[in-house]
Image (cartoon, rainbow, N blue to C red; front, top):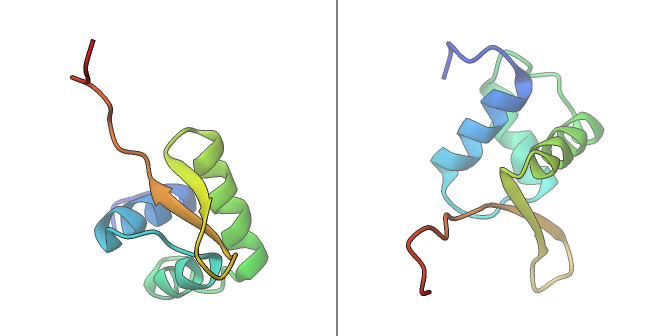
Length: 80
């Protein structure tokens, strides 16, 4: 992932690699080994929101009521 140029690209790739929904706290942990290791909770939250606005992540809630972000799966080839 070292060739990715933006924080948003890096985090999206990290979420893809993780493969499961992430909370802001988990996303912050995923950023710890990034070129932006000092990105903290607020910055990470804004980055996740930006990815959601781009249509790359969907926002949901876990059973404890925490906001989660998960990859949007393609619906191509669905029923007619």
